[in-house]
Image 1 (cartoon, rainbow, N blue to C red):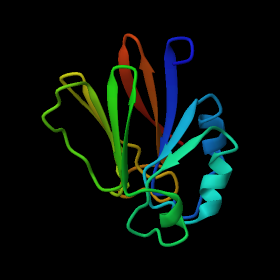
Image 2 (image 1 turned 30 degrees about the horizontal axis):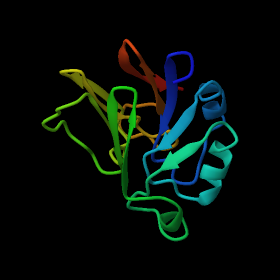
Image 3 (image 1 turned 60 degrees about the vertical axis):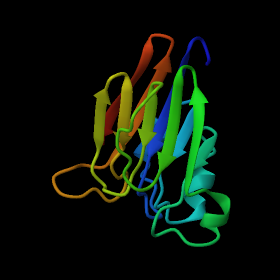
Image 4 (image 1 turned 90 degrees about the vertical axis):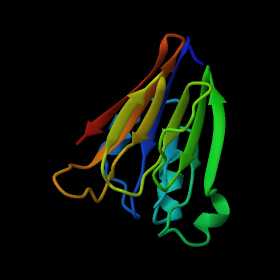
Length: 152
């Protein structure tokens, strides 16, 4: 972690459209996670100009996106296990602090339970219902993890 802190930009359900606001919102992130329904490879290429990108494919993503992404991935950062998939993830029987990131619903959500987080950034391009376009910002530090939904 840089300076004891790592900042991750989380985005999902772009469906081929990357709003310009995302560039400003992700200007200081160390990494970007795209939680699927990317829509076009150009989205990942553009996001990579801001920070390294890790992505899963969603139900609308076809080749060549599926060949360049995964259905699900896990990694560790600090004391946290991070799990990313497109379809909604729910709290499990967490033995260690876990951050579960998903998309699909186009509805933003941050829930915390017993030191673990559940994050859905909503949709940056095609929100549903009363929601505005949104992304999530996740900060992991020695003191813990926190996530916020940012609407634009």
